[in-house]
Length: 55
Image (cartoon, rainbow, N blue to C red):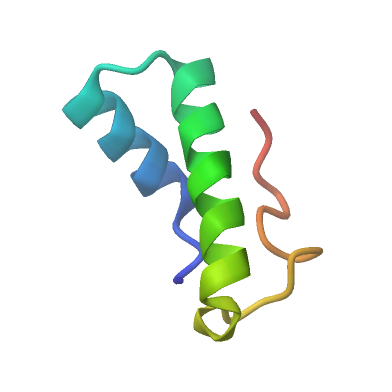
């Protein structure tokens, strides 16, 4: 996972037509799923992921 939050949210909104809050909710659900199923795929810990991203 490459720590690309904003592009992921933009893609969710464009492809699925989600509002910003909906896109954040879907992103968060996917992030949590991937953290559980593919923890080695992340380059930073959960404390660091999303740092300096404010919604």
